[in-house]
Image (cartoon, rainbow over all chains, first blue to last red; front, side):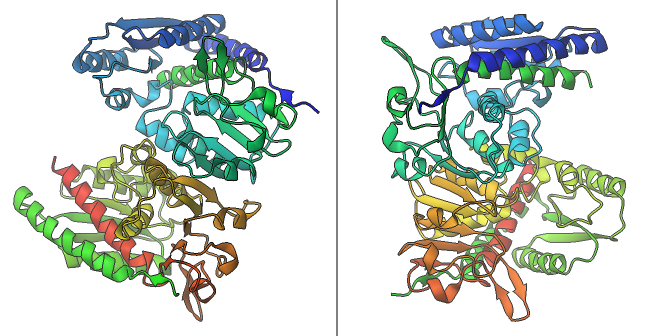
Length: 283
Length: 283
């Protein structure tokens, strides 16, 4: 039997429809339209694509966007001033910093300056802490997207053996916290893991975000497992994830494809968070 | 060969000696003595013991303490007012809430009100978020104690298979974050875990804080593993941890005993955090 292939675009459309309705209701209530500002510095080509996709999504659901475009050689002080201005501007209801920032900028320092109320990506210490202690406020977008996909399949994570292959601040660590909040038995692996297969062969759900093409093959998984592939690897031959799709497709139970899996849901989840920051700014 | 038994009291004494020296230096620099306030509500007998032990430790290293003792029937509003007063009092350089609070009080709400600068236990969202994102500021005390014990043995956690049996806000989750920040391959188990042995038999280090006597026996571990027993189970027969000490002592490589293992180090680590809050209040 072949694995069920998740249609991320369809899930995203359902979320966007719901958000669209909620935005209309909130506009009536607050008598204003949400405005989201993105700060971008330099000319990273992936950044351009992400911003374009997100702004398109915003337009679809009725959120206004504004991208502040700084040159590669912007100073840290100029960026700090820009964020403070957005924090204090009552017509801005959400702030995103498009990563990566230029190398001479301390990314964490910049992120930490965002007013947690307006922190669309949920990466400020206060929001990360609430994610860790189970009092979830604004959840980082990729983890929220993974959780949304799992819940969309009607799967309860409580007691499930789940492996995350990634331990970054944006993906692995907050996702681990979210799954522990929901009582999963959780393992986090990464490049320093001695024996990845030990973990993955036992897993009911594998969430992989390593950025290593063909990292996960049929030899890594048990029959019927749920594979969530967060990686986006651009090559001349096309876009790939971590999972060797052809190798696993007859053994896995459910797979998210790349492209068309986690990606579109992640964009939709960023819109979900914008509703939260919009509400925060009006409460 | 028998396992090496860790002497927690000795580690604690070394830490306290170092803190004592640091306090003297800071007193000269700031021209004041650190004052730490503990809020306590009700008459939980373990709370009395913890406070007594901690205050004794404070006295040893030259930290002044003050315990504000509220009755069991205190209201949430009264507690909130007490915390706000301590937050604003420039003669208070650290705040602890002795848990558990009475059942009618929302513990998280109360903890979240502490000024993160003065948060000795590192449990406010901002400090928890910094722990999660690797920009560690004030680390929760029990996780800090476990880390201190591991480092004291000269063991690097990078790439090690580590299992934590506990997923609470005070122990398991922040400890998981700390070990991921140091590149361990990390698993978190708990009461909902299907097959605890699968994880523990593979582990280089097991940190157990389940509160279940004899949870970990020789059948759960691999030869030479490092067992850190955080549990404190009081019975008529004495105080026990999660580990069946006699069962594992010839197989484990290193063990922390209960009592006399993690406990004393935890008290010493609370003093370590008081230095941080004292510095925060003077910077």
